[in-house]
Amino acid sequence: MMKKQDMNRDWIATAETLSSALPYLQRYDGAIVVVKLGGHAMGSDDAMETFARDIVLLRQVGVNPVIVHGGGPMINAMLDKLAIQSEFVNGKRVTDAATMEVVEMVLSGVVNKRIVQAINRQGGAGVGLSGKDANLITCTQANPDLGFVGTPDQMDPSVLHHLFEQDMIPVIAPIGAGPNGETFNINGDTAAGAIASALKADRLLLLTDVSGVKNGAGDVVTELKAADVEEMTATGVIAGGMIPKTETALSAVRNGVRACTIVDGRVPNAVLLELFTDHGAGSMIRP
Ligand SMILES: Nc1ncnc2c1ncn2[C@@H]1O[C@H](COP(=O)(O)OP(=O)(O)O)[C@@H](O)[C@H]1O
Ligand SMILES: CC(=O)N[C@@H](CCC(=O)OP(=O)(O)O)C(=O)O
Image 1 (cartoon, rainbow, N blue to C red):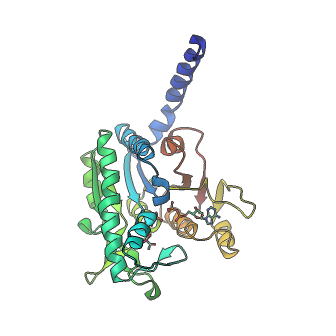
Image 2 (cartoon, rainbow, N blue to C red):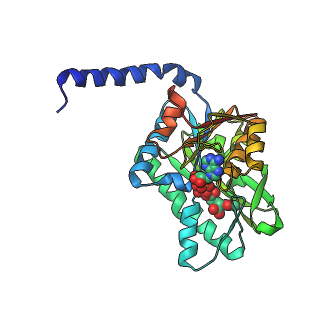
Image 3 (tube, rainbow, N blue to C red):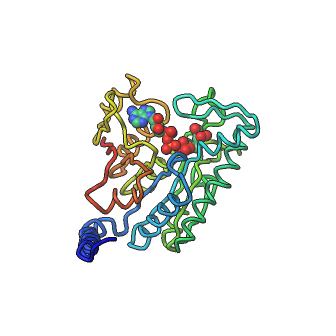
């Protein structure tokens, strides 16, 4: 059992943490923070609850959070059940018409509503959208070899501003419409970057299942510049799902997002640690 003296020390430490958050709370008052929650970072119901509580707390202290989610592992599970084969090229899923239907069903359905519901259970007002809603994301085809994979082309973030005004928290599935009525599958990181750029967000956090971008020796690189990303990609040190993440981070900071960090979403309260303390970890990307 904890001694009374130790308990007092614990409370004092908690109070100190809260008190030291003041400059960060002031800095982020009214800020727009886009958080990309990767499928691998979604984890258990407990982890989802902690994530949702952090997001509702952000809203409560005057931040405008926007969640953009992935769900690659959940799409894989459904494609497996339906015996549809799937392959990735440079971190993007080759998407034919049948795959596209499954992607939209899983992302806009189960995954999106799980996050919305978790936010609402913490007392927030989460609203689920995809890039199709209110013309948020219009896409062009990324590359004919990838089928219905979209590159965000035209963005209309006005619906998000309306939701901010109403204290609502947008939760966005990475699906976009094409100019001819097509539905496009957008990599979750790419969609988050496009939304952050369109909103000129203050921060973009890409939550994933590794502690950051690792170098050849396996150590996390805490700060990367464009040249580092290019070199590490060319030499294959940055590979697979990390390619769209670092590409997104670079293009976001070049397009007016103030800072982008790739963070370990498995760490409890990763979002609060990153925004409101000195203990943010992961890799910060700069132009
Ligand atoms: N240099 C690197 N540093 C860290 N992770 C890397 C690197 N290169 C490739 N990866 C891989 O990228 C993965 C993250 O991408 P992804 O699986 O798409 O995550 P998410 O589902 O969170 O979007 C990591 O789990 C890791 O296997
Ligand atoms: C084009 C493309 O690859 N789209 C992704 C969309 C989901 C996603 O990005 O999920 P994670 O963030 O969990 O990886 C896919 O089909 O898997």
